[in-house]
Length: 159
Image 1 (cartoon, rainbow, N blue to C red):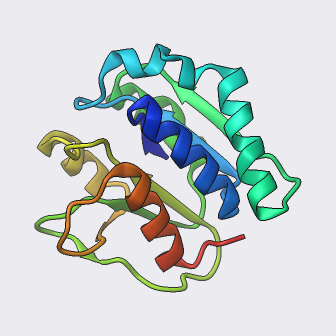
Image 2 (image 1 turned 30 degrees about the vertical axis):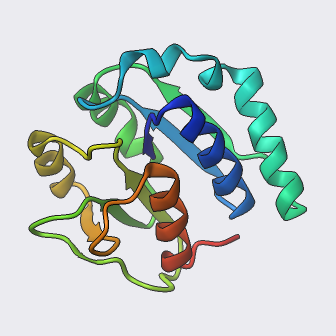
């Protein structure tokens, strides 16, 4: 699950997550997501499919991930989509108080939530804390596309 990033970043995230074996990508809005990102050309099905294909080619894979774009508000996304899409260990990456270092080589399915550029707002962090374990990816603030790769590599969720 990824807060909808800037269109240029979305293209990178789709390709890299696909190459790393992610099989489900949910894109959602939250307070720090520009509403225009949800309607940008990068979020259209044809362009999403193209970047997934490029990721599959890179990894020499043939199993296309499922991508869902949820345009509603953050709290509605949690209410309508959370329970049906969560599997296994559940983490959300956000630096700060309450975060534990990102675990390594987690066995079994993983649900990972990555926030937007600028991070989640405090109310979103509190809501996510009630649903998932907060993890920290280190002392540096990372761009979304870097955070996705770093977390996937560390969690050991490579397909």
